[in-house]
Amino acid sequence: MNKRLIKTVVGVVLLGGFFALVMLSFGEKVGGYMNFEEAAASGSEAHVVGQWVRERPVRYDPARNVFTFYMQDAAGAVRRVEYPNPKPANFEDAEQLVVMGRMQGDVFHAREILMKCPSKYNDMRALQQPQPSSDTAPMPAWPNE
Image 1 (cartoon, helix red, strand yellow):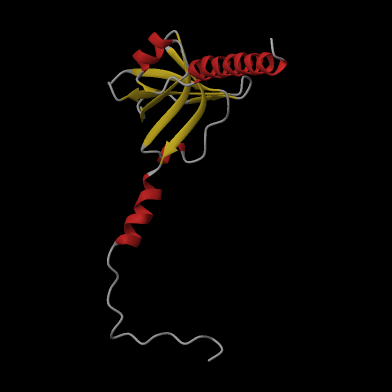
Image 2 (tube, helix red, strand yellow):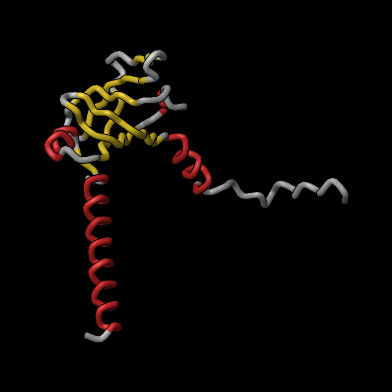
């Protein structure tokens, strides 16, 4: 057989194996957006969107470095969420949460928390509102003029 043909076949096989390995690894890591029930059934990493249940206890255990709270998903299920870090900044201001991690039993173990705060969007709405007319007000002068 020709050496060039052998090298081509070996290269294609190695490339195919590498591609299959990447796809298997990536498929286990990201399960997409799910609710708590789907995340538990899949057993893979998931993104769960929901809201913090303010009526339930919130706790930070400094000995274990675990922040615990309860979250309600879009389907209405409430689960305890454990996050191996202190409480994120602006947690109380969050309008919506996205937790990324895995379900283990009835507890969601989050490796990351994203917060969607209304203040970020309100600032943009204020900029998009029509501004009052400045026809009657004089333009301010520059300090050096």
